[in-house]
Image 1 (spheres, rainbow, N blue to C red):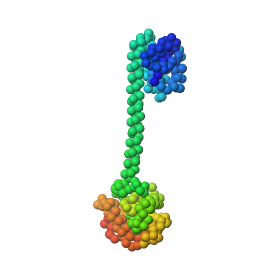
Image 2 (cartoon, rainbow, N blue to C red):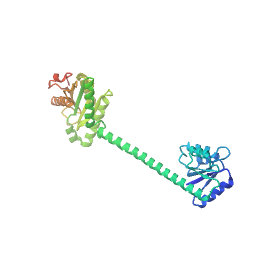
Image 3 (cartoon, one colour):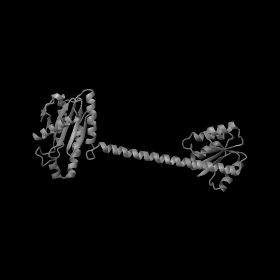
Length: 336
């Protein structure tokens, strides 16, 4: 921590330095003009106060003050003006340039020390505030990172990395409302990994977790439209939401997903559906209306999944066990 004296009079400069150093301000720096002062400020750190004469050849002390206050790196350094001119115009110009105070010439030691002490206290307070601001910014950034992580955890399934059931429920209601306004069809696929309990029992839970992650990645990768959405519904179940899609189109998507999982060729020695990991897919679709509810679409897809599992698994089945005509059903078909 040091003080920079900017004064073109050598005797005055040395006298001020001697007084300040004798009163506990070590390492006082000197500059004979404003240009020299700016060079020191640009090359040295630790200057905490500038005491500058107003009238100097070339750049005046007021010009120096303006230059300091316009520099982001120097802006917070207090500037005390030395002046024999105490008229209102000169003082106003100095304060407008950014000076924090002035010392009248001839300089009285007690006044000099009082002004310096006040300016140094001001600098200390500014430094504390800046440090506090930096700490607040850092804390805010850390909190934002934590919030982002929490938000991600709140919508992502930790194991598979795809969306979780909670987020799916939110999106289903949003898409349902949007389909009501349009109106447009909405399709849902309920997906279950065939004989997954047998897989876990035979290969172990770590392998089961890897299997779930691989299936989730595959389902995500095989959805072609930006608005198509897949989530882990729970356990070995997944769900796919297809906006503006009728049942025939949803069946085609379901078959693509079924074939894609089968092509992973993950060995499954204890599956009655085949030698590798497979999925069963239940499909339902309808045009939402105000007398209905998304739960009916979920229930229909779940019933279709039950039918797929009951008829041999490793297949895609659309809801066909209920009459959806009163609910504006799109249609029903079966693919296996």
